[in-house]
Image 1 (cartoon, rainbow, N blue to C red):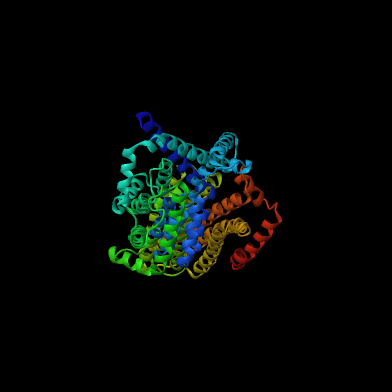
Image 2 (image 1 turned 120 degrees about the vertical axis):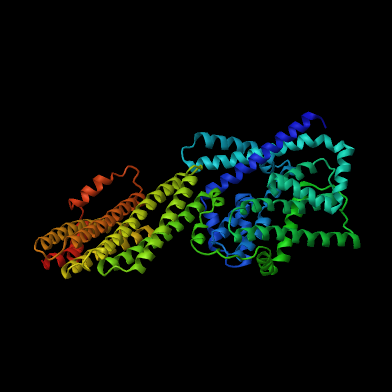
Length: 596
């Protein structure tokens, strides 16, 4: 084998790995996170987890990608450790599909259809179609399909080049002797483990072994331990993915490693015991690509069936090796959802960012309820302290979500993913400002409490503030529901109420000025009253912004003119708006004007 064959082999390996990465990445991106979202929802038992792990891995052609996502889901506490065990086992089975696809290169037939699906024919066709789609398509999804087909073609081109490069080895006694040493199971397992750990893909290392099998120098006895070692080597990806994550994520990576080592130990013991006692007829026969694919599947399916009943023992072992420690719970649980390992799946990362945002929104609405108590009653230091803690958490969540989403935006995203990122950034800003206004209400209440003379709002001022804050509470709860449910009908109820709130604010300011002029209210109390009104009105403004944004994204307007839309509404040109405005006017404005 000359230096040129080595160069050709390395070039083929590069193409093979790049093609596999392109194929896996395009399949993952085309799914827009749906496959991983299924993992979240349908893994309530180990057998279900095994099945779903196998299906997802077969679909995205990468056990490494699946295990990385699983580590991220466990870190985010979306998947429990027990659920992850089944998915990890299933991923080992699903990854064997690649070897079965590669065995098609051995297909021999004069039949036109069979010749057409043979990779030597199909790969160039798919690559050509892929290039046409990628360069000619305008839609991002079609471009992804083009990349997927191109990746498939590149993968097989690399495979063919590797086969051609190693062909001279079939006549090399040194090469034959090298693989003769692989009959030692320990050497074979270590070789498979190291090669796979370096390239971080069991599918790729199995593909390399299939290419080498065309030399006829690799026997079943040499290939079997290598294949088992490849399953151990692929654990390096999950181990690397768990670095810097939660202890639960590290436990998931440990379970992946423990499962594969245990499976290899059991299978090695069984197969070598059978060979010593009974004998395997094809033990020293050259192995084919099909034989490698078959053994890869048999090994993983058998290991899963044998170990699956002992999933709880694996879980307990993980907790014994990586013990619990204080501080695993708290806000860190929520922030764990923003695991950067999940950025490989934009659709899933967006869902986790949104779930974290919803927690931030819940803290904001809780602070509004607390601010309401302060605005309509007396200042309470315990309530204020709780608000400060919530506000600190809101600020932390805002920073973390924004940082996460910005990192996600730098990746190659579909149009839908890009729109979702824009939505998240918009909503983060609006709800954080609502939280700020709740804190300002608290500070206005503290200002009144600290004023000399044990001041409080007059009876009429308290009554008016109660009505006003009820209206703001109504618009905030409607806004939160509209966003959580993505309900346009609810979103359309926001703007007419916001307009009524604006009018109420003006009315209340005028009435308060009258009380101040008549001496029924002190200057200190007046300032706190007006400041509270302004803060609450600003909350309704941010609710209006959220409502308009929901209508924009749900109606699919690309050139939506917000100002023109609001102008049309405020002129009363839509019947729905006029009816809602009238209803809110009767509910909130009329009680104030009637009492004047």
